[in-house]
Amino acid sequence: MRSGKMKKTLENKIQSKKRKSRKDPKKLNVGIFKLLVFGWLLPLTIMSITIFFFVSQKMVEQTENEIQDSTETAVDICGMRINASIQSSRDASYIPKIRQYWKNYLIDGNGQKLYDGVYEFLSQMYKYDENFLNTIVYFWRMPNKYFYTSSNTSSADYDSVLFFTESAMTEVDELAKTLDTRIGFLCVEDHLYLVRNIVDKDFTPLATIVMELDKNVIFQSLKGIGWYEDACVFIDGECVYQGNGNALELVHDMKPDEKKRSVYHEESRHAFVCRTKMLEDHEIRYAVQLNYEAIHYERNSMILLVILVLLFSVPLIGIIVWFLYSHVTNPVKRLVVSAHEIEQGNFGYQIESEEKSEEFAYLTGAFNSMSDKLKNQFEQIYLEELALKDADIKALQSQINPHFLNNTLEIINWEARMNGNEKVSSMIEALSTMLEATLNRKRQAMIPLSEELQYVDAYCYIIKQRFGDKLQFEREIDENLMKEGVPRLIIQPIIENAVEHGLCGRKGKIGIRIYREQNMMKIEIVNDGELTLRDKEKINRLLNYDGDADKSVSLGIRNVNRRLKIIYGPECGLTVENDKEERTVSTLTVRIRR
Image (cartoon, rainbow, N blue to C red):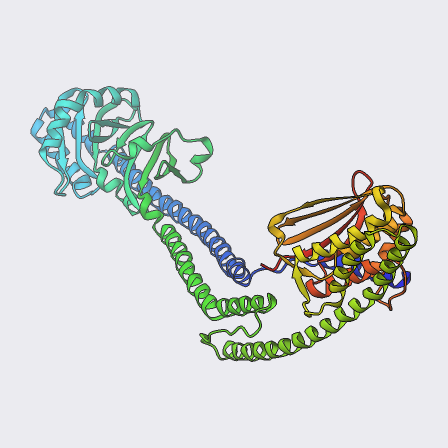
């Protein structure tokens, strides 16, 4: 028997470990949602963002390269136009006509001839050159007399010549005296002049040629830079061209390595490109403001596209979740709820058919059919068990009657021999009460607690006649439980066991305490006897042994325990253990059915 119990204990431990190691199942709708989020939305988001950053980076690099390349081309064109203007200014020195006209003038003093000759030369050389608005020559010995020609373009007029004579002449003359044979650039208000001296054979300055450059023509190529908005140009640190003036606010000091190639900048939602280039001994710096929004239009369009894709993915996930919930999760949930109903004993529970899919409609029909069959089977089994329990209880009761009757008759016989007094009649009356309980003429399986306590009182009276003052009984009973139904003769065998085995004929006290604990009735029988380890082992054998009954004195507690478990289930029954005061406490647990 011990080996069987050890085997059962080992199996329980193994099953417990398996339950702990097994993970708790997750809800279906949670699993579907996680699958959609982590299996679709999250990878789609990561992929979209990765593609966006990769393509965006490539677009930024391509845009910067395009801006830098177009800037290089535009700056080279500007440089070629300025260089062509410088070369044209050299022609006035290399071609000796102006020097010759001046020499003739010094000989004959004919001023008209000098004017006509110089004018004709300037017209032939510069009138049709689109780089110049006006070309002016003045001789150092006649600083107040000007020889000029204007370009045939519509932007050239006499006002610009008049501005030169009135406002720019002084600064031009001061610059010319410092140039020797070099060229110089001078910007007076909005006019840009290229200044060069004409020298004689011994390099003595003879005259100065001043060319007003057409900035719209010279710097026209800057407008060909991609996403152009505005530009400004510096020559030797002086701003000679500023467009509409916005680009001036974005110009910063150039780093030395920036002079080798165009440099693209972005700052505070502004974009511009800078380029510094040397022309002879003059530093020309270009700063072009670009349209920031236009540059980033394609990138912003991609951002919008990614956002739209992700936004459209969320409703799509919602539609899929709704579809799965209505067609999968909800039917499964109804099946789970119905299974719980069956688990709680509601056999025959039916599911209303609301399924939209053929598979779940079949499962619902199969479940309803199974529930009906299960109900019929359990009803049949229940009736069979009731008949079996009734037969088993009657068999147990038949085991109690001869044993108790034998003890009681022995007590009465002893009293009659020793005393011969009237107590015999009282004892016989108590005996008749006990016989009424054991015979159960009304065939009642359950009786009120008050009636069960009458049998207890009858037994206590009889047993007290045996022990006299050595035996004391105390009661503490909840009066609200008196009408509760209990099985017949469940308390008396426990009190008898306490008297015979707990007190063992010595002076002592037995207490009866009955109270309610949630939906259970607790019946405690307390005696002064100490429960030894050997007693515990014996009681465990009696309470857990399912074999044939023996003829021991403790037969009653075994029968009571079996009766309670048959009627109420395994959670009810009899327990025997020590309390804090080392007294023996026998506890009957009975389910309250009301």
